[in-house]
Length: 69
Image (cartoon, rainbow, N blue to C red; front, side, top):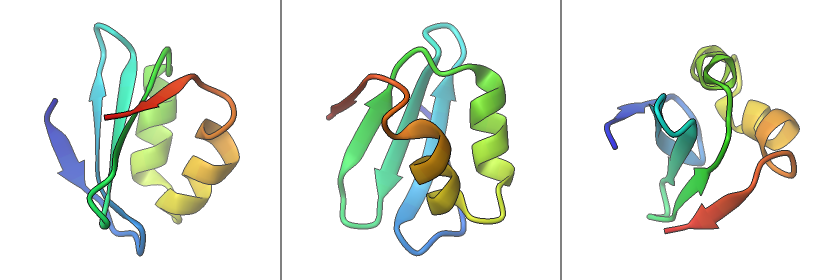
């Protein structure tokens, strides 16, 4: 999945696959997580958020199924 770099102290880049509604988050420490059944508008809001990490914590984590890859 192609990811775009974001300005964040913890997150390196984020990607989104619109066909499977999968959000991929790569962290500076090398960890990569995929979140499933995420609406595209959540991805757009995440990329444009003033705090990408804050948006992830408040709107994605705990709301969508995920897997560490």
